[in-house]
Amino acid sequence: MSSDAAPLTARAFKDAVYEQFARITKALASPVRLEIVDVLAQGERTVDALAREVGQSLANASQHLRSLKEARLVDTRRDGTFVHYRLADPQVIEVWRAVRALGERQLADIERTVAAYLGDADAFESVTADDLQRRLADGEVVLLDVRPDAEYRAGHLPGARSIPVGELADRLAELPPDATVVAYCRGPYCLMSYDALAILHAHGRRGLRLAEGPPDWRAAGRPVQGGPERG
Amino acid sequence: MSSDAAPLTARAFKDAVYEQFARITKALASPVRLEIVDVLAQGERTVDALAREVGQSLANASQHLRSLKEARLVDTRRDGTFVHYRLADPQVIEVWRAVRALGERQLADIERTVAAYLGDADAFESVTADDLQRRLADGEVVLLDVRPDAEYRAGHLPGARSIPVGELADRLAELPPDATVVAYCRGPYCLMSYDALAILHAHGRRGLRLAEGPPDWRAAGRPVQGGPERG
DNA sequence: GCCATGATCCAGTAATCTATTGAGAATATG
DNA sequence: CATATTCTCAATAGATTACTGGATCATGGC
Image (cartoon, rainbow over all chains, first blue to last red; front, side, top):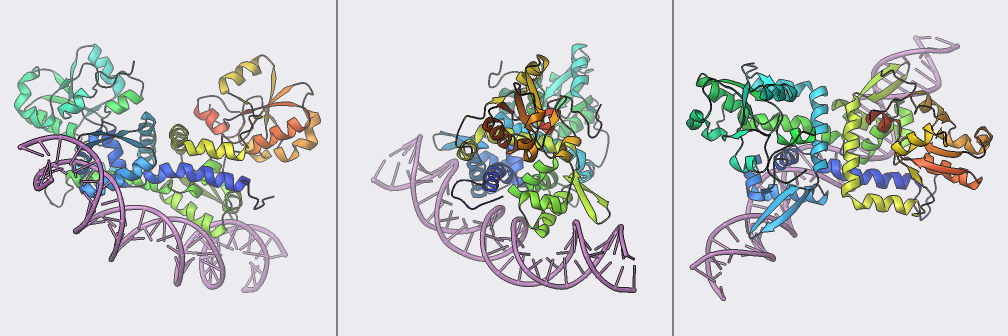
């Protein structure tokens, strides 16, 4: 049923195919590279910026990026002495989201880790995307993007204002005093919105959290404002 | 802004989170395990059957299954001396499909591998899912499931007949002589439907291929007949 | 209890992957 | 052209993983 002939046998064909797909899964088989992908989902970054953000040495980040590039998950653009990395395909975000969804359903440790960090204080009330749209339509809430300014400019939720979390304490006056603020950042495992809520609450403001970030919002087929055009 | 205190720092939190998700991607970072997942998408299997199917030793297959189980991608059921493995969650199929879609878009080598095996003979005309539904409605074609009988019984496309590819040559009489046959098997990288087309063509029959298998069909939100109930 | 079967576990080797270091490209500036 | 900046590459050592063959475990039949 199987021979060792020169042309591909059925087994050799399957080996070759799964080997190819494994290039992708191997590239993603590292916490550091997953984090890199998660960051790049927000927009392109230089090697140096990425290394800083994920807490790795420059050389190490560069190595990880190389392996991502070999698997065609990221692409580069040179600008002077800087090299900007970006996701090679929006489908990369889909893979990451699928992995995340699976982890959330199957890995109880993830919930435990989150609870441990946040002191399982449910002071951090959250809002679903559908809920948010209804409340926004009713004018009940103010939507606030607390990511760095550059990320806001690269694309944000429709109607969102931008106050990076680092400036929030100083710019509270820009928010209507009685409004409920819905803060969001990069995505479900990004901490900036939690920090923002802490600041809001410390100043007696009402604040909720939206877990989704712009990549999730876009993946769900909802429109994103600014940044790369997309219909 | 960051300390080494006993409770989790922001960095330690992120490390812990991505580490958890990497359990999943690491479990999938092997061609053998990807193939196992692809086979299990068709239904549960014993260790022995799986080992045979993916061309690995029993011990090795068992090891791979253990690592998949540790990552919560598969689950087991014991039946006498047999242990049946199955996917722990339909979301596992979604992850695999997302990886496949990405590979098909980014990795040109995959196309090349397929072309090399099939001798890039486009004798294997294929049909899209939408196309098929229209043609089925018009009574233009006969839909044929060429997978092993057990897999057909575990769930098949609505209206499909079952003739395992190994029996096809002997059972051609069961197919209306003038009908165009649309053959499908497990999915895009399964070879059984290609073999079936070769047999059909050798007997002067008209045959097309549907790339999708039942897992893909179901993932696309289309109904599947028989097997585990699902609305 | 004893045996057969299916599966798991274990030890050892080879191969692969990761992080680190330091050297060295590529590019811009003066 | 010299120099600084940003990034990549090569070499190393340490850790992890893959596969094999053999021992062991769990279950069911006798």
